[in-house]
Image 1 (cartoon, rainbow, N blue to C red):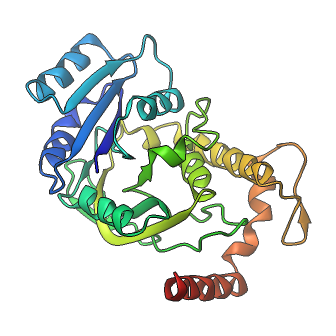
Image 2 (spheres, rainbow, N blue to C red; image 1 turned 90 degrees about the vertical axis):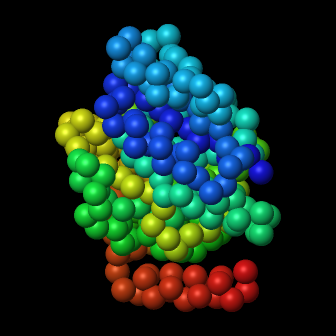
Length: 279
């Protein structure tokens, strides 16, 4: 079973060596790595080409113009030839068994549409700081699941054939495109958690999710959740009416505050326990 590692690159060659070497160390060897450059400088593109030269498993493509992460990641999925796909940022890395653990779940549980694990927050030099502790198994088949608070996170693998049956990733998103993908895949089958830390997330000033765009992430995520509510034809949530049109992030997140409360958390834990027992 081939795994397509999808890498959206934009002026990040300085950190790419770690990403590249982590891919070479994978215990699952049936993979391809597709890099789509979003109009980086020629010097940046040449550095990436130099690193991957001589290994046909790495494939390099370019956008004609800078198009943003939504467009770039959408194109990457289209370029993928593997049955299973997963994104790795060029400034991050994955552990040697990351792909293997994902593939094992897809092979043993045919109804699995997406797998995810836990990521390690690392410093500028990719040295571990702390794991993302919120990652855990989520309840499947729940119309009111919106990954809020975030539990599905890196490292994620998903079936391309199932993705092709969704509305697909929204190319207009500049941030939150991953959440859009997760929620659409969630609606098509079982999502399963791998209780391991398989992704190394580098924190640095140039990171896409850590620069000025972070200020907008709240708004983008709210839009993703609102679109999910509409896609699922939901009208009421926890006794409150869902607005007909999107107005603000606060209005959407206010609808979900009950999901932080103890009664909801207890019900969710019971559902997950039953799910683990009865499959």
